[in-house]
Length: 269
Image 1 (cartoon, rainbow, N blue to C red):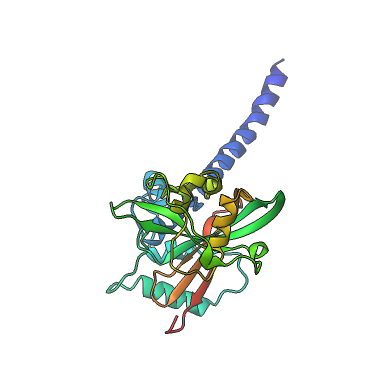
Image 2 (tube, helix red, strand yellow):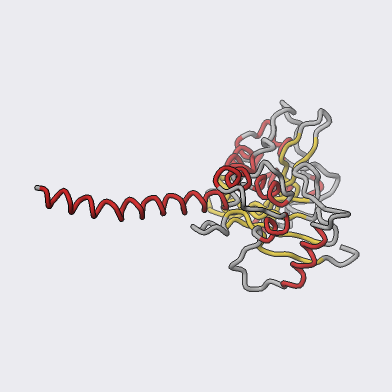
């Protein structure tokens, strides 16, 4: 009996150490992961509220996080087509001590490209929506669809300028300004709430996209939005640059919402 107990103690020792090491690494990966676009903005801006800074303040006060280091960690390290010269220039511009530049969640010049699975007359289709935060007169904000790409709706018989959408019954109903936190899980609300359909789309005198066609087919009961498939964010808040941000689900410290593409814009862009 004594030999068995000794064997179990010897066995449990290494396993306990391995388990503790695994838990620590799992926790570290969780801290480094950029879980939401809000957290991406906080880390880009070097906010003291970021989870990563708060975590290391508790476990290792000697670890210093410069803004440059934090921004470097926001690039997809597994990308194969990076121009490292442009990345260096970009980070240098953003972290310039005299003229630092920051991202603003409510500052405009950024949007979400949301690929959605839909049902059109019973057949499975895909629509790509462009969405942006819109400020309301009372100071609140909401997500609105500013563009739609639905090739299967482009038929000559439908004239966009002839489509009229009725006024909403309740103008206060909308897509919540934090819908991005759940990857626009509530996007199906748009086709379910026909009485307030106008609230969910940017209204304009004319369109260079398929918004009127989508609205018309929803009102006619032909189009049902089922769910979000993918989300990509695009930021143009840093002068001269555009960032494309995608979600990378992997068990590494370089995971979550990361910059997948950095484009240097021409002067007229």
